[in-house]
Length: 382
Image 1: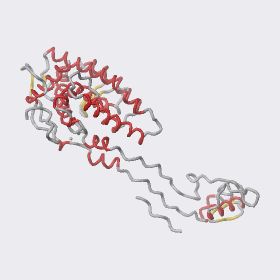
Image 2 (image 1 turned 90 degrees about the horizontal axis):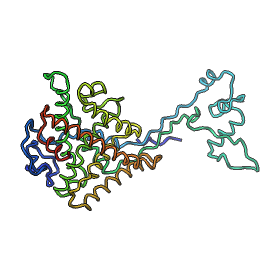
Image 3 (image 1 turned 90 degrees about the vertical axis):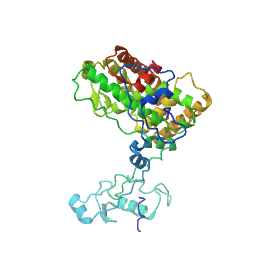
């Protein structure tokens, strides 16, 4: 019997009328912060988020378009192999003395009958002729006779929102420390402030691609971003740091351990972020969960200046539902996993508050130049 074939992301930073991120610099940030003043030690921010820079689109699509496994081909067991492997002619199934080769396998009379019933499709648990004969069961996964590989069950497709968030996730940003500056706290803080400003520009562009965010009013979009930008920034740093041990990955080219943090004046920030890293590491947070939780953190803002609370609530509900659907389809063995992830948001907010305080103290010292957009968002949050 032949086998079946195997199945083989102007004047204001948020532009609600466009599906693409705007281009410009942070001097246009007056659309975010009303009555912004000129600051000393301010720099222009780099260009806004470019949708062409979105990374991981094709790879992410391939990730959730998985095909089902393919059953391996059988390879018949030859008598020559049996003679060499079992010189005493023992039954390959039960270990008893084999009476001969039955259906190509050295077996005893009892197992011979078992093979016959298997080939003929006779049920093992059926009583025939008033008595039950040779009630034995062969493990399909371990049997050399069957020689089949049972594929694991294919994971269900990702939800539409989670798939979209994976596609619009921005590509990596590098710190690129100034090689002409001497090592020390000034270089470290300057590098980190410049990196945070560029991350902030990307966050603004990324937010516009979250399903439902661009339907909010311009004022509500600004309120959510002003309130949650540091939480999003911290969560991104935490996710990059998950593979490391007691190190914070601010960027792929800027990894800091505790001793380096102490020398660079980043120890307070380091100590604040590490507990969150350990929390997510214990949960084994996946990228799909990270991108969804990041969007939830934006929608779950504590801003007191929301105009349309119902619209923001609908955005929150859709993202919560996306997370729950993902966990239900990908982690059915842990029905509380979505709740466990949502319970990390208070710690994320506490960590973001400490980070804002750290950067604001740097600003007050006046030793490090800060880009205008980052400075204005920092003052709005402080």
